[in-house]
Structure formats: C-alpha cells, structure tokens
Image (cartoon, rainbow over the protein chains, first blue to last red):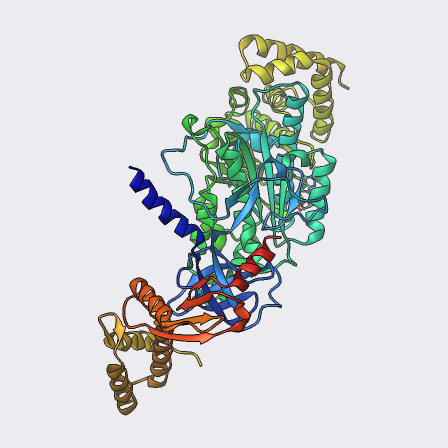
Length: 510
Length: 130
Ligand SMILES: Nc1ncnc2c1ncn2[C@@H]1O[C@H](COP(=O)(O)OP(=O)(O)O)[C@@H](O)[C@H]1O
Ligand SMILES: [Mg+2]
C-alpha cells in the first residue's frame, strides 16, 4: 500500500511541476469582427479563444484548414500573424440574483454605470435544453395583467408565446406591461411577507434596437418599480452583429439559472427578426452558404435551440420555469416570410397585433381570431375560465355580425342585442399602456360585462363606467376582491356577493 | 483567389493518395504534382494551390520546434526527441534552436500544441494573474 502511495505521489508531484499543454494558432485574416485562424487543432465549437490584451474570440466555424472566430469587443488591435490560444472554456456569462436591477451587455458586463455585478456563478451561453424527462406540462399561469391576453390567450409558466405584428403595433409595450405586472405581484407579496406566491423575475433582451428605445423601456420599468425584479440585456443597433447574435443566448443563460434553482423567470426577446438579421451578417462574414432570403440554412435551428431552453421543470427537478415571449416584427403583416413562419412553428402560440386595429383605437391591437395559446388554458385560473370561457368565440362572432350588419339594417332583436353586447366587450378589453390589471379585477369586470351590466351604458361611456367600477371594487370591496384572488374560482356564494356588489355600484353610477 | 468546392474536394482526394501509414510520402507528392501539371485537369490551378496548403499544414503538424535559452546537450536533445516521439509518433521533423528571450527553460511547439516551460512564460502568467 505504502509503495503504491509513494508511486502515485511521485507521479502527481511530477504533474504539478510539469508544463501544461496549450493549443495555439495564428491569425491569418482579420476583418469585419471575424478572424480566420490557422492551427488551433484542439479547439471546440463555441470555445473562447484568447487573443491577448483581454480580447476574446468565439470559435464558430471549425473547418479543415482553419477556424473562423468572431471577436467580442474591439478587433482593431488584432494583427495578422498574431498568436492566439484556446482557453478550454465555453463562452460564459455571470448569472444570479445579483443581476436583478441591472442593465448588462451580451457578456453580462454592466453598462448602467452602477458598478460591478455581484455574481459568483457563471453559465455557458449555449446550453443543451432540458430533456423530456425533466419537463412537466404547463399548469401555472403567467398573469400578464393585459385583460385580452389573460382572458383569451392565457399563457402558462414555461410556455413560449410569440408576439408578432408590424412595427409600432404595441409589441414592446405588451412585453413591458407583462413585466410591470410581475413586479406588481412580487411587490404585493413582498409587502405582505407572503412566501408562498411564486415570484416571477423578468429578463428583457433588447436586440438591434435604437439606444433611445431601450433607454425608454428601462425608464418605464424604473418608474413602475419593476427594475428590482428585472435584468435588461442590451445589444443595441450600434453594437456589433456578433454581440446582437449573442444577446438572447446570454439572456437565456440568466433565465436558466432561475429555472435551475426552483424559481420562475419570464424572458422577452425584442426582437428575433433583428436577431436573425444579425446572425445573417455574422454568417456572411464567416462565408457560410446562404439560403432563402439570404439567411444561412441553420437559422431555423438557431431559434429553435434558443426557444427550446424555456421549459417548466418537474417537481423532482425543483419546479422552476422559464417562460419566453419572443417578438417578431413583420413587414406589412406578412407572416409567411421565412423568419416569422419559422418562429411560429417553434412556439406554443402567438399573439397577433394588427395595424388596422391599432389605428381604430383598439389597443392593445390584438387580433382575437388570429391569436392562439396552445397550452396556456391548462394554466388559466378557474374563475377566469368561468367568465371568459366563451368570450373569444363570442367576440369572433361579433366581428362577423358587425361586418354583416354594415350591409343591411333589418336585424332581428337577438342579433341586434348580440352586436350591442359585442361592442361593449370590445371596449372592456381596451387597455392603456403600462397599467396592468389584477386578475381578480379582470374576472369581476368581465363577469359584469357577460351578465349585461354594461348593456344600458352607451358604448362611448363603457370605459368610464369600467374605470369607476374598478375603483369601486378595489377600494370599497377589498375583501371580495381578495377572496376571488385567493379562491381563484367563483363559487355560488362568491358569485352572489359579486352580483350584489356590481348591482350596488350600478345604483350609484351616473 | 477563390477555390471552388470541387477543386478543394479533388485536392483532398489527391492528398489522401499521398499518405502512407498516416504520414506524407514525399515521392508520391512529387509524382502527383507532376501528373496534375502535365494533365491539366479542369480547375487544376485551384487543385494545386489547395493541395499545397494541405501539404503545408501537414508539414506544420509534423514539425516540432524546440527552443531553449541556452544550447541543449546532445543527451538532452535525444531525451526531448524520444519523449516527443512517444506522444506524436515517429517521423517528426525536429529542429533545435536558441532563443535567449526565453531567459531560461524550453518552449516546444508541435503543430498547434505548445509546451511552454520557459521562465519568460512563467513571468507572463504571473503578470496576467495580477
Ligand atoms: N395599449 C396602448 N395604448 C395606448 N398606446 C399604446 C398602447 N400600446 C402601445 N402604444 C403606443 O404605440 C406606440 C408603439 O408601441 P410599441 O410597443 O413601441 O410598438 P412596437 O414594439 O410594436 O414597435 C408607442 O408609442 C406606444 O406608447
Ligand atoms: Mg418594439
């Protein structure tokens, strides 16, 4: 035994003093943020390459005679003939709660001037998505606070729901509203010392947007008190295509940390159209072959491996989740372009925003007929199911009837009543930006609408009446609202209370 | 010059013909180049330049550069040669040279693998750790 020990001790001592093997290469060509490197025979895909002076490259193309690497940071100081070496490490970003409240770049470095990030854990930017065994089906809601979404296109934790529409249709606003609502719920739970409510943390990834737009989103989040629950990852239009390409993966890594640690996170990719453009640019300088609309052939795989990383984990794996809201910007409503069709096919449904509706004043401009959530209804709370179960169909019917009614005026009383009701429901679903509505208020107001309490109010006064009713219910019927929020279902007793409250309100409302 | 895919593929095939037991056979290389120059197949210039590149890379892969601050004794040279051949197989082109900037110790490069045991490398590592 002792001789064996002596033997291996000698060997281990030898290892300690011996020289570590390194793998090096020579820069053969440099340009557009991409280096072609000869050598580096041991390099791995997505491995960080050390260019010296703190400059890091990422090996993206492994070819027979050379390695193509994208440079993260300033590439102007890199010279042809320079020696570089492998690091044995995949690209990583810091993760953890220390990032909450911060604005960082694609490498997780702060860009908000608030000092260094407190984090002692890093995650690789590219990670294999959780397998089927670890996953659980979606059954807990993400309350977006947007009544049209929570009632008709419910989203569950771990789901991937696409937000799609032309420019300036309110896509970003929808995402921001959802984040503000999480902060509102978290704040309330924090204030009440409630440990049972599962907090939902936000990650907002801004890709290829103007700095001023990102700054606006950050200030809205700050004003709403949402930043303490939010991480913002920015690769703006002025950043390199490389950084824009990496940003959503970095954000996903930060989200995965919450999921792996039994927590819930919501990630918004704003937007993947610009991400695809950045990837096309990176691929072109890497001289990869391109296909449809000049995108490289693997752009589909790019987005599917990104969105596959959101999931709901089973109890055995900590019960965490990562919900993704990718955003796609269409051109003139063309959803059949390459990138939109790809992302539609990967996600669990879409919220489709229409320019026409937006200019008609129907905001959020959600096209109810074209929007779906394929898995979210399993996560919808029962009370909402009870009041909103038929509303989507009714609204669709109303649109048809309304279109038909334009041609003839001879409508029977029943159809007329249906149209009048429809007009009011459309009003109820209108919602101004940055004002998410608590789920119990949504339930109560929808119940009132469905049961004809708005029928005698002129259409142009519905919004006013709704605001007053909301006011009345939140301030004067606090217990009832708390009960609905807690029981999450409308029992006969609760329904009777709600009926009494709404009737009382109607008597005072002028 | 842009070399077509076809030319690359053919260069690769020709390169494989030149390998004997995993190492490049100089005679075959000469023969093959002669043959292509005489026959002038379609895109032969591209084939030749890509072939040249493959040969250069292969040579590089089989070349060991041993640098030391002071000249190595013949015994030490053969020890180094033996250890390198144990790892990389026979048929390495080993060159020994002197490089005073290493200050002390040795730096060995085989292809893209580097074993840097020089004093200079340690000083660099120390500097980076600050
Ligand atoms: N529900 C809403 N009510 C009123 N204005 C809205 C609403 N949603 C969006 N807007 C306004 O519409 C404009 C475009 O919204 P934005 O979310 O930036 O669109 P997109 O991200 O689709 O380009 C913004 O000025 C925003 O303030
Ligand atoms: Mg936007």
